[in-house]
Amino acid sequence: MTQLLLFNVFNGLVIGAFYALMALGLSLIINLTNVINFSHGGFLALGAYFAYTLEPYLGFWGALIVSPFCAALIGVIVERILIRPLYSRDPLYSLLLTFGLAFVLEDTVRYIWGAQGLPMKVPQVLQSSLSQTLFFLTGYRVFMVVLVAVAVAILFLILKKTRLGMRIRAGTLDLEMVSALGVDVRILRNLNFGLGIFFAGLAGVLAAGMLGLTPTIGDQLIMPSFVAVIVGGLGSLVGTLFGGILIGVATGVVTVFYPSASEATIYVMMALVLLVRPHGLFGEEGGTKL
Amino acid sequence: MPYWIGYVGGYTDLASRLLIIGLAAMATNLLVGHSGVMAFGHAAYFGLSSYTTGLMIKYLIPSTPVGFLAGIIVGTLGGAIIGFLLARLRGIYFALATIAFGQVFFFIAFRWNAVTGGDNGLSFQRQPIDLGFLQLNLGSSRVYYYVALAVFAVCAALMAVVLRSPFGRTLLAMRENERRARFLSIPVNRHLWMAYIVSCFFVAVAGSLYGMLNNFVSPHDLHWTQSGDFVLMAVIGGMRSFWGPLLGAAIFVVAQDYLSSLTGNWMFFIGMLFVLVVLFLPRGIAGLLQRRTS
Image 1 (cartoon, each protein chain N blue to C red):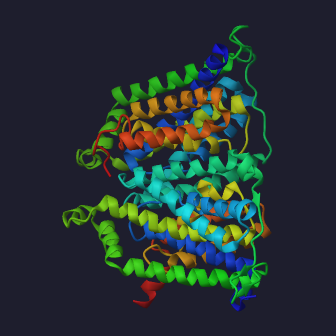
Image 2 (cartoon, rainbow over the protein chains, first blue to last red; image 1 turned 60 degrees about the vertical axis):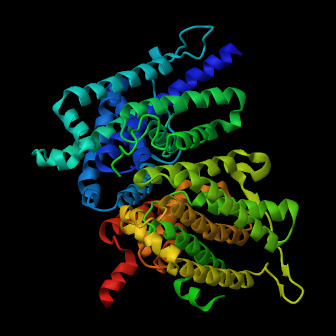
Image 3 (cartoon, each protein chain N blue to C red; image 1 turned 120 degrees about the horizontal axis):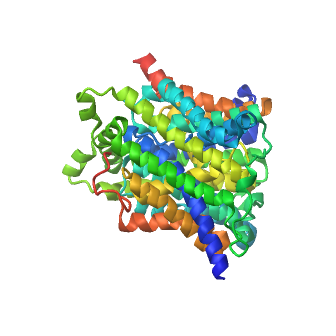
């Protein structure tokens, strides 16, 4: 029983790391531009398939580094051409645009790489399990959790220390003032969008190694990521991170006792959070600039 | 066959489908266009109502009117409960929460195999109506079309009455300037909740009709993509106008029917259509027509 619980908690942690990685990207984009990026799952799939294509040339490690950048590049282009004209309008329009874009991305992936699932090669080193008793600690899963932790740490460092990061944080609080101080908001939003998509792409490569590739690989992750943003509270990246891991672990625990309710868990949690703290666990009351 | 559907290459069931989906889009637009809040989870109440109708007819009482009523009641009730949680949220936070709550119903339908049939969906058979003085053989597509048309007409009239009432005017006031509406002592959260319930009522009517049209409900009728489709129809047609969403639904339903018979990649084209409309026709086709006439 203990082992089963441990297994599921750890599994939940792995899933939670995915949710958090995606939700952080979503949250970054929402905070600065009020865009609810429905196509985040599509960009995740792009990252995964880029890695699949690049792997024979660059190896797993090379693909792991390069393909999120490729996804981010596409993201930057999409932002420039499609999303930028919509900032002055109601957020509904950008939401709908990314909704349509999600269809386009999914079908494009299906058209290029085919509808059937593809396997992703993972280095031998990562495939064995670390111990006989704790069979669930395969190298790949531990590696994923560590990598997510490192990526998140780097993100927070970027936001704290670099000029770009400071501008993004300032823009989250008051974009007009940032613009008045002479920062080119268009470029700031553009780079911020790319950064968000980078995280989607990274999540995609990692997911591909664990689950294999399908055009709909992002679909199961996008809703929980939304929930992570809501539970954590809009405007708070720490909250988003916490929200993602929390719902992942909660899913894992519920799976032990009542497997068929595992997906519903996170929505029940969301309802509870909204009842008690409508602005999310880490969000500030009235702090969301809506 | 209704005479007009022939012109767009359709068939009777497509005409019924168009009306029913159009009603759902109009109901969604009550919130999106008229109240200015982003309701992105309406497929949940649509599907909840379909399932209730189906389950009622299949397992409890094999009667179309009873199933229809049960569907409307349960669908509206679901909307009332979720709407209560949502009414305190605004803007994109509201949108995110509607999307996420919408998925709850999808997972229940998808996972609760014993009752809903899971991924295989739920098949049932709508029953003929016998009211003593009136017999309707609902099995015929044509008769069902006229029933759907009658229900649609009643709902559209009701919706127009609601929107013209003082309550409907407060919704417009909230859309234009919520703070000012609050200063005029309008209880905005309660009115938003009421608007949510009214909207869910109409979407539930559509859902129940839709279930009976197909004699089948699948969990995919509750998926968030379906919710997005409703909003998109409203936007394509023109969300500031009353009939716009019906026009949008007509374009969407016919285009989907046509494209999916032509190509396996029809989702790509539907998606491109969305992107282009959002970019270039922000006021929808109704907005285009209004500009022409003015």
